[in-house]
Every structure is written in structure tokens, then in C-alpha cells.
Image (cartoon, rainbow, N blue to C red):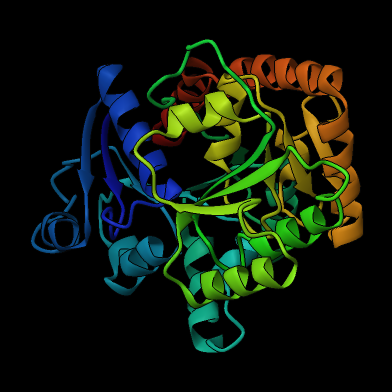
Length: 337
């Protein structure tokens, strides 16, 4: 197949950017002709000029709401002999809509209806999307991860809870982890928390103030970005994942490669697809409940081992590179046919 993959901006370093690059590279390695384009090139090659009238591509993959709105507003869907359009979503559907922008929300809903097929990451997203835009051709296909440096090394765990987020912000919800850990710190004096990710935000400053108020200096460490992510995973006992909104948290798959289980909270959309009772712990979204989940992991090394091995086996089976690319090839082939 000749596939155009459109991502308006690939320079943010977010998990969605990595997932799009992995997706395009994986299909190219399977022999497909894949063009991965950002906005300026895409608008000139696909939307501008003759576009797909001459049959340049079989299918265009629009990788989010911005991208499919661009296609709609450029009049692409009304063009003769256009390529089929698949909408690829890297967030929970609710994440695309902002209450302050009702006109934009209406354009997104209209654009969603125009796609020839839609992919969502989790089964709960399928139910959510159908409430927004009841599309007849909707598939659930998760992400896969290429792993990180050090993948496959023998872990040397220490009493560390790791949160491998991209940034400290309200959605990543590090405050919940800090509050919950503060309830346990006196009972587990050897344990620490390490918070990875961009720490120059206003929310990060609030986290520092909370750490100081709770007397956790030296116990909760804000690490910033690290070039040794594999080392961080190999030294951790388990990961915390208190996020309230994600697309498909690649960090959970990365951690599973190191046999690390996750403590998530049920306000995270799609969590039931990734964290089950055999791969981790899911709690209510309040500090006391989250602290209880952390306590169970911290005090029981056999539980950590069992859930970590379960996470490794589950993710390796369900979210393997080969399986995810097989699902994509089947979907795209059916759309083109």
C-alpha cells in the first residue's frame, strides 16, 4: 500500500510523536510505501496542487483531531478520486474537546464523521467515541513500544517508586502520588519516589512546595529528563501512574519489559485494557485509596514479582510489535479495498 501519515508537529517529544514514528517505520519495514509528513509538506503535497487526484496514495492516516480538521477545512473529502482517510487517535476521545472552544468542538465532531475508518486505542475509548460520533467502521488497536536502552538487562531493583512521565503537570497528577506517599513515608523509611519529566512548569513548583510541606525532601526526588531511562526502570521496584488522562501510556509497556507492575487509578481512561488484576493495581482516585495501593506493593515483594511478571507476559503478548502491525495492515487493507 501507498500510505501517507500526517502528523502536524513531530517535534514535541510526546508519546504520541514516538508512537506515530514507530507506526510509520513499522509499516515501511513491511514493504509498504510510507510517507510521514508534517504540516507544511503535507499541505503542499496532499492538499495543494493535484493532491491525490492522480492516485498518489491509497490511504491517508490523519493522526489526530488537528490533522483531520485540516483535511476537512481544505476541502479534501469532496475531491474526486481522493485516497481513503483513516483517523488515528492518540488520546481518549474526550481529550480533544475543550469547553472554552465550542466552535472548534463542532468542527472536530464534523470532521470525525468524514473519516472512512477510525482507530482508537482502548475498548473504553470505543464506547466513548460512539457516543460522540457513532462511526460504522471503528477498530480498537493499541500501541507498541520499541523499548528503551537497557531493555533486557537483569533488573537490580531498590526500594524506589518510579513515575516515568514526560512532564510534571495537572494531567499527570503527580500531586496525588506525593500526597499518598506522605501517608506512608514514616512506615517505609527506606523507600523513595522518583519523578521523571519536565520540571520547569508552574505545576512542578507546586509539587516542590507540597514536598516541602509534607517533609519529604530527599524522599521524593524530581529528576527532570534523564538519558538513562533503562537504568531508571531497572533500579525501580514498581511504577506509579496516577495520570487522569492519557492516550495509551507507553511508559507502562516500557516498564513491563523490565517486569515492573503499575499502580494506576481508575479515573485514567482505558486503564482496564492495560492494568488488570494480574498486571498491577487500580485504585480509587483519592489519596487514601492510592496510598493503600502503594502500601500493598511496598510491603509485599512476592506481589511485586508476580504482578511484574504478569505485566511483562501480558504486554509482550497483547501489545507486541508484530501483533499491532498485523492489526493495522488488516484494517488499512480493508479500508482500501
